[in-house]
Image (cartoon, rainbow over all chains, first blue to last red):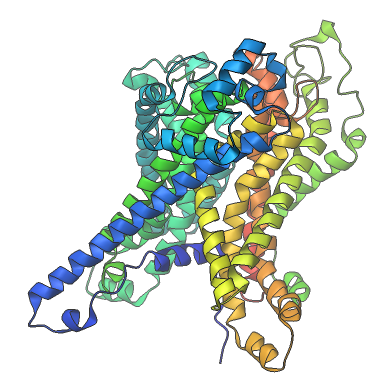
Length: 355
Length: 280
């Protein structure tokens, strides 16, 4: 018996993800019989329903866990939780403010009661009141969310274009192109957002005057933040995409396509692209997370309103209700994006779909 | 065996460059006086905001301190924050990964696996800097909280890979043989599972060091890491932020140091992965 060859760590994680994403097997008897088409379709619908229920339950568990951790974290930090909610010991909150918080949060109640009350509030969508901005956290985040979504979505598209572009160039352009693109990917993945943003502003805004240095709300003002956010992600996506692209390019089906007279770019478009996209799709949750995390920095470099900048302000002022709100919203969007990525993976890859 | 393989494999040019670059950063971290004898904290207001020159190759900052001198003296802080964060991340990752993967099919093992997997899912749902920021919201800013926060934020990635490695090794023939021979689970874990599961962690930690340095400097840049007077790369960049249009050198050079360190760590990590790929 031979040991399975250890794979590259990153790819190992991908494989784990892909196999865990495999759908539950449908009813074997109905699926195997060619006559009974209707039960088979029903079996597929049941599998889809099971998938959906699993995703929803998993998402709720994640949100509950985030809320629970934050709740107990406030009480674990040494000192008065009322003071922690009002911005930590440095805030020098007045006695009245502390009393108000104690009452609002029921801090004199038993811990379990407080916890259940907090969960109850969150379940009804009440995220509490921000202590630094004195407004309703839910409404505040709803205002901030679109800006971040536009930024992240544009950056995701740009990152994919950059990654596939370099991968395409690397597979077709020979040794030099492969070496150069590999170097570009490593540097791109290593660049901190804030530095890239600053340098782009220096060159394109200050020196050449081509683009506005701060986000103005117009499409042209979106260019620099989107590029800044996209480049590091493109570096990572490019590395993963190219590995699977090279694997696919040396596989028998690529050879037989070539033997049938497929051109190089046709081979890329019709056969290899699908394989290159797969690990990227499996990584979509990761990519989204990376964009969300990068948005904190990019939004603050370009003075752009959004979820990330709100979180940064909340963390600096230690506004716990606002931090909790952003954490819950980002966890929720992460769960949704991972589910969508899983769905897309099933659409692109018949091997995952078939049971 | 790994050592002879490392020696036998031909070195590639990018890896040599990366090793030299990282070596220089380490020298700067251990003995900054060798590369830059001047005092990184000595203020000389007359020289404030001088452009790069022979006396100050990378220019000076708002207090007339040499940017090059401060960069060299900042290597220690930046590198040790990154290394400590990576150590915390890998340590926690190994702990969680082994807890999840080693129990096997019996009930306590499955329960541990399910619990850890859920925990990892929750940590993944607050990706990267977000988790780090939430941690800092509770602890307050500073170099130590930033280190711990970055470590925590990197832990779930390590944990997932360690888990898959542990599961793979646990199912291998040699572990089966050890169990049949009557070895206790602790001995099996120590002698067989850990050494085999940890080889990829070394590679990952090298790759992750760059990411940790980038994240830690991002936190400093946002004003949540090492406090300003200290010559730390992120803190220097944060100070340079105010003068980015008038004194570009305060932003460009410390940032290059971060990029160089992270890229060098990535190249070395990938080189290790390529070599270890067939052996570990």
